[in-house]
Length: 127
Image (cartoon, rainbow, N blue to C red; front, side, top):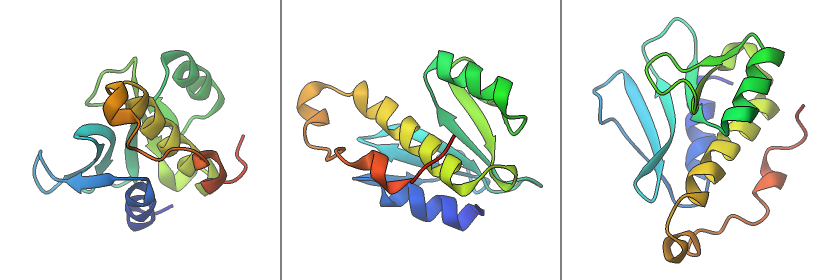
């Protein structure tokens, strides 16, 4: 996936928004004001950082050279995805997992306003 495809996909998730709080080099995607993905715009690689369960992140890092601890973020919870070296279905799956990870931590009242059912169906088969 390229940067624009990642952007379009992230914004297709329910109630997702984007902004550039760190300047023109980083695009951030949020749900209910909480970040679920960082997209580095000024990189030789197309890098997207996502928040994952720590055990899941560890497993993925062992399996894929293109998934690494996030360079600028908490390395336990955030992973850099090198999009130019991963299958699009896996990219969509991990962005969606990040989104759902963040939604799960929202207050129940807010969480209930976000339609998350059927999200597994939007990224297709991966892994």
